[in-house]
Image 1 (cartoon, rainbow, N blue to C red):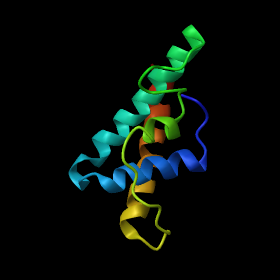
Image 2 (image 1 turned 45 degrees about the horizontal axis):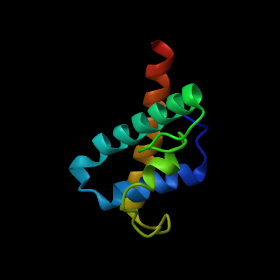
Image 3 (image 1 turned 90 degrees about the vertical axis):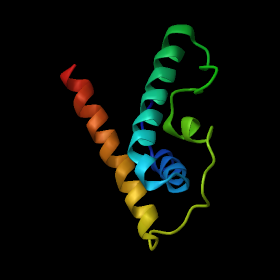
Length: 98
């Protein structure tokens, strides 16, 4: 996966905000895996992945409906933002062990 920036986390959190709370963690993990798959594809072919783009989390997130970006006063948004960060950490930890 390409380096993750604030905008990547924000876009993913906005996708999660549109999803039912019970589906959010699964969806977050799926988006991270799609970004990783796209990055590998780009590395092997030199072309964008036909579904998931260039390997950035933002590109993967933008294939889905995004909620309007609220401020950090919005508890649900904060929880979604935190979930994206936790899933990214878990992805990195799992990847290092493989």
